[in-house]
Length: 201
Ligand SMILES: O=C(O)CCC(=O)C(=O)O
Ligand SMILES: [Fe+2]
Image 1 (cartoon, protein in one colour):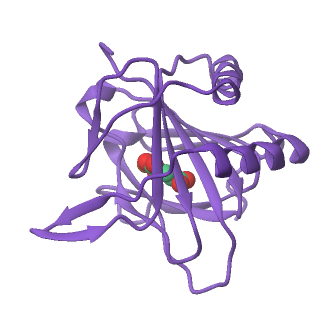
Image 2 (image 1 turned 180 degrees about the vertical axis):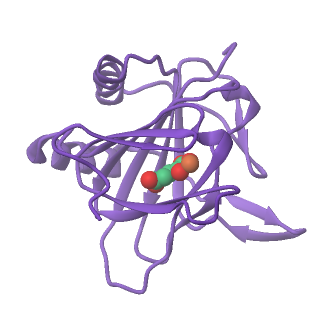
């Protein structure tokens, strides 16, 4: 089943609304952005603690923000760098299309199919009660899985394409989990940017 209709594609689900723009960035612009973010970002490889054991996070990350307040999720605390010009103008475009304000962006670099992002919700208390998350994909397309916390039949996936933008409206983070799963397929690199708004920043 095709979950979306044409162009701006809207998906209404129990406790969630997703809006997907497959061609938010035209291909040449998306290619340029991918290359400049790949080379100019100070990518970090963090350790995560799970049940008392320390592992490498299965992707590289970076954080940009309007203030220098740290941002914590799982067992990781990240310190934001100030927005580079290209991300600032991207942020303005995303704010216009979504009619939301964002002051922080988390970048993920998935080096290959072994890199992933396990089931979670973006529900850190700094994001407030009803966070809206805008997620831009550059590079290799990967399936984005999401499942309802309680309604077992509510499990879906969207393929996030190069240059696409996915907006997860409130209250999705309260009722749903999402993930980027590992794959054995031989695939290339993917960069994802999630725009967030930290309250009282
Ligand atoms: O890579 C993605 O599409 C999702 C990233 C994500 O869920 C996150 O950073 O919280
Ligand atoms: Fe997330």
